[in-house]
Length: 104
Image (cartoon, rainbow, N blue to C red; front, side):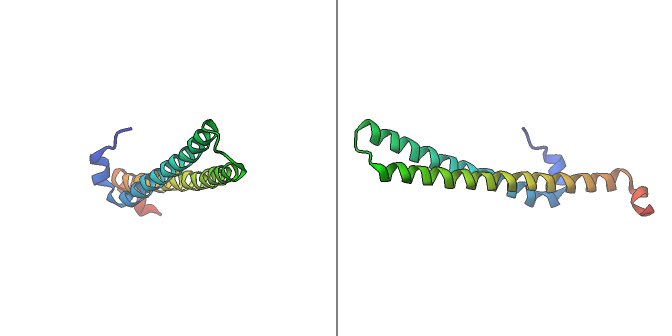
């Protein structure tokens, strides 16, 4: 998805929501990387036969925390997208139909 620079210039108030959306997606990606690193570390220790119960529990705890964090980031990203689109719609409606704004 490409960002329309003209639209961003027209509705500059939405920049903070777009930045929040991108930040939440980056945090979600970092959590996914942490989870995959923990899982591959567990698999490597199983392959080299150095795994114990603690490494399995630690991996499960990291995976559970990462899934919860990713869930939160996804909700936040979705909310930021909603706020951004709401701001864009409001601004464009005001510019397209200026007389209808004065009726309310």
